Image (cartoon, rainbow over all chains, first blue to last red; front, side, top):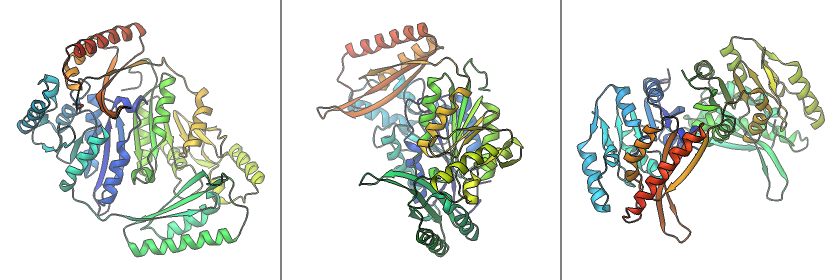
Length: 263
Length: 263
């Protein structure tokens, strides 16, 4: 449904990792990929985190690769027994998996350089589903890969970021949305109704309201909302922005005490 | 499938928010909920992030509430037009939604206290699906709610955390897994095969390997892996731990230069 829902390509992220679900490690990759895609006019429509279990990975991959133009997976492509992503991807695509000659060459050269033993575990990282294209890993060499509309990336954030950079030329981007963020020192509850009216009058502009609470430099409390407008049509965006700024001004003139909470 | 897959209850998190998918805001709630559940012996099996679109929220809710014992949603319960979670939850459960008398009472008392106007937007926060139980919000009053096996929480992290604390007595916990994390200054590629053998011999213990790279206090590079063992059976965990420690010692004795990379 999201495929072709507008002119921009759509995407999903699939994070594979027990360590994220157990709470041991906070995910650091979804936000990086979200910003990378936003810059390129690719709409991230969904993200999922699943455990290191083949059935779960295959089911999520099948759902996401069908629904979205691109799927980016992170995690589970290292040398240990819990790294099962490549096998799950092969299974989802119904293709065999074996040691990839170019991946073997890259890894063997690297192991020689480091004086590392060629363990079966290390060579596991050269196992790539048939028909996949390698994604270079300038950090630690073991490559990611692309197959169909799925990009399989490392979980270690430094490596993941380097791989994103490498695969960028493989993506067809869209028109990046422009966005404006306006800080309103007004409680969301006062903004709600008139802001909804503005949103209804500008269907091409997405308007979000995000309450905040912070300590000001002088130690006092600051409450309010960030109103974020996003859209691809510059003129529509500016029109909506003008209305939101006028609304905020009107509400602030109306006075009342500065907001003391964020509802 | 995960329902009753072992004796611990299972759970999923559903984050609702365009601002997370656009990359504007990194999610801060999944990790908090993951740790909260882990402490209580509830296994977090999946997390999803979906946009502020009713169809997407309803579809994800239906999939997750069917599959897991508990579902925790965050986001989309504020006073603005983009806050559509309560309506989506009502739709997923096929029940009507209206202003909840107790929620209205709480909000009105709070607005009076603050000298706030009773806007329709503010009163929107009292709209609760029929049959739901309120979850108190000690921070900013507008309540979350529980319906069936779904807990609907705020997106603002401070409020979300307070609501988790409030709803804790409503959950049936399980046996929390115990875990041990062992730092190995050994590249993962050397650990891979023997570690996989240990994992295969201890099916009741989940063994994960997480490579790290960091600067030591003296400025030198430190590479290796954290081996994390998790399990509910203390004796099985200790047996596996002993084998992992022996393996690490053996590999470190075998010498070789300290690891220079993490593959």
